Amino acid sequence: MTMQNGNFCISRAKRLNGFILLEVLVAMSLIMGSWMAATHTYQKLSLVLKQQEGKRSQLRRELDAHEIGSIKNDATRVSSRNQPMHSSAKSVTKGKRPFGKQASGI
Image (cartoon, rainbow, N blue to C red; front, side, top):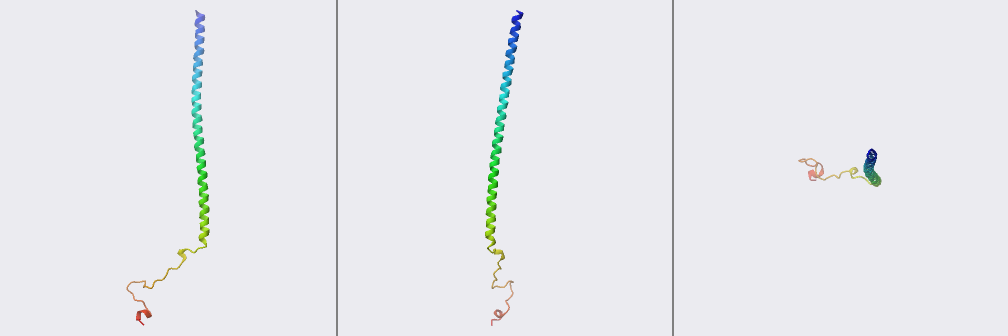
């Protein structure tokens, strides 16, 4: 009877150790799966960010080239700010009569 009880205890201990090993393997595989999913998400986001940075820098370069080209074209034209204002025939100040031949009527 002692032998049978001893074999039974050993057999039961082996089954329990096997069950614990299975639990550890399942837990490790769940952890590894979640780790791989998180790593994949991080890599995907970093790739998208890198592509957006590339597009932004390309757009900036194109805008800079356009602005430089428009500045070169504008340099040959005279700005309206540099042209003199046209004089008017009317007096600048109110209530004063113009001087000269027009005032005397001659």
